[in-house]
Image 1 (cartoon, helix red, strand yellow):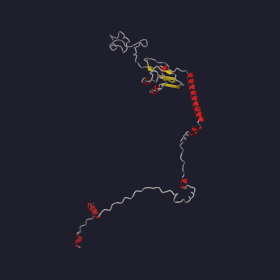
Image 2 (image 1 turned 90 degrees about the horizontal axis):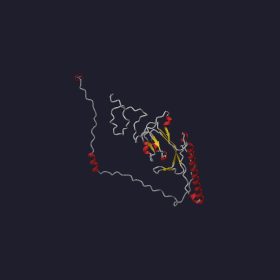
Image 3 (image 1 turned 180 degrees about the vertical axis):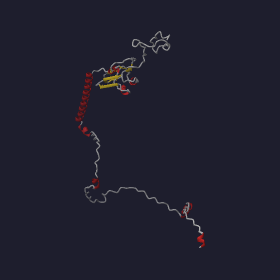
Length: 272
């Protein structure tokens, strides 16, 4: 209590004498007094949309799905990032919901242009939950619809030009167009017909085969040669071998047959 008469100075953990401050009041009058935050603090996510190539890697790796991206293809190269990467996509939507963020930092690791970072602002509390969703897109909804329409028109014109080129080739070389391989028919599996018992019992009626006219011997086809295995013949043993086998074979033991013991004669029977 004697040492609690003065207040400790707001020094950060990066200061050399941070652990020397053992005495004094430690309560700070926040937000008027704040401890200094280190420069490598990782708190709120921030995106430099001018360097973003809209690769969608951060949204795919996010474990809580707090990043939402809606890319739009461009008809040509839009620009280049600070590291020289070409930008070929527009970001119609690039939202980060910090209410879901778990501050794992995986999105900043996979970012190829390092446009997604975590700054050192840790106090960004709001009274409404929707205000924690930050929008980093640089396109309005009208501009996004215009970019989509331009890309769809570009795709249609490209397909029409390709079809016209194929038609011109067929007009110039009609023979080569006819000799071109036809596409294979698409395989479509069909169900097998169900055979009822009455249909299975009735024999199928086959049309009569017309008798072939007799052909001369010279025109008859020769029968196909089909090799067959010769039957194996067991060798007949000689008399000496047969005697030797009978000697070596163990003789069977006689079967055990239990018999009834004879009953002793009674004295009455002996006297008679």
